Amino acid sequence: MQLFLREMPKGGDLHNHLSGAIYAESYLQWSATDGGCLVTATMSLVAGPCDPAGGRVPTSSVLADEALYSRAINAMSMRHWDRSLNGHDHFFATFAKFGPAAGRTGDMLAEVMARAGSEHVSYLELMVTLAAATTTRLGRELAWNDQAPDFGAARQSLLTAGLRAAVAAEARQRLDDAEVRQRTLLHCDASHADAGCGVTVRFLTQVGRTNAPAAVFTQILTGFELASQDPRIVGFNLVQPEDNPVAIRDFSLQMRMIQFLQPFYPGVQLTLHAGELTAGLVPPEALRFHIRDSVRIAGAKRIGHGVDLIFEDDVTALLEEMAAKKVLVEIALTSTDRILGVSGGVHPMHTYLKFGVPVALATDDAGVSRSTLTEEFQKAVDEQGLDYLALKRMVRNSIEYSFAEAPTKARLKLAVEKALGEFELHHRS
Image 1 (tube, rainbow, N blue to C red):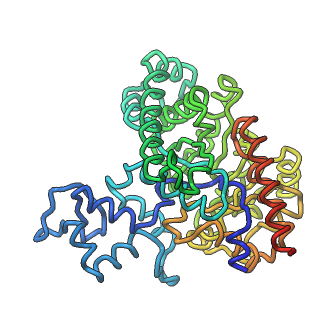
Image 2 (image 1 turned 30 degrees about the horizontal axis):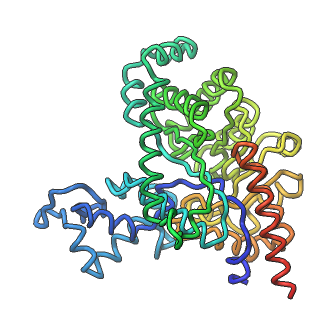
Image 3 (image 1 turned 60 degrees about the horizontal axis):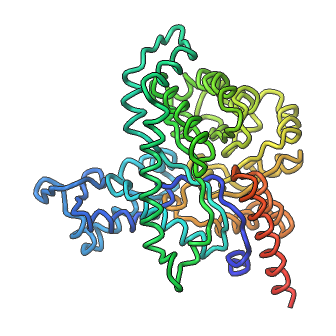
């Protein structure tokens, strides 16, 4: 079955954090190449100079120490994770360990595209943090009244301060440089080009939902601006743990921020992490409205995870609304299991399908989870009991509900249908 699923055309991966998609082995190798160090107390990568006596070991020496190398990989991912421990905290703690190596955007892009090409994935929407320097500076300088925030005045202040041009220039330069590096690494202009060169990539800029309100507003505005200016950037998403106390406190405020800004950018679509929660993780009240408000207030076209569905108020009406509005749910079975301990029949996948809500499989953070999109398909078969026709619908959904521009989407749909036809013909013969 795994060979069958590996060869199956999979369409797109719509929920994929670029930094979390990279395997720890790559981060360690890049750190060694750059003269970086591993802080052994925290198993975190940092820039040099190193100090072995002080616990800052050259990463190059880590590669030669099998035991330390293995410990580092385990700390930077869910490999050999002990289920009796806290998977949620271990999962989210890994991102702070990647250090300067996570700045190699071109190398990261090449790795993810090459893996996608080898798995017969034709489209990726990658979540990345763009224009961080500009948004951090402007967010700190923004006058903000926590008691009575004035969204209109804040937007005008940021635009007057030059946000529009500054974030576009910073993001454009980073993506341009990354694409040049990626094409070089995958030999995209040579006769022996890697299969990853044929993968279409678009980007979603990330908004850190645990930041202060002024910073979050600045990042949301940046997301709208970038998606309006650079065709490679097709939307944005709120990231970081949804159960974080700041994220819980400010959830409704952040939905209102998005609702206010949307009319200024009517062509921008967004997908939101919502319902990446479960009973006991947060107070019951926090489980009752995150998916619904993401759809109704923020106007999300897609929802990431949607695990706490059954705890939402008037869940039947919500499901009927999502089906009518064709709001797709991006389901990442592996990370949901690792983070929330939700799998098998407890997962709401079949409830979404029963009500006609479109669904697509995704990896979320394949490097951290030590997974692939093929393994997500395998889990859908083994743990959710899906058949080939259900998987094929999800493949089509992953292109139909992508945020790619219309001509690109049309091309990808034709290519996927052709690939599925050839795949089926091959396996019938």
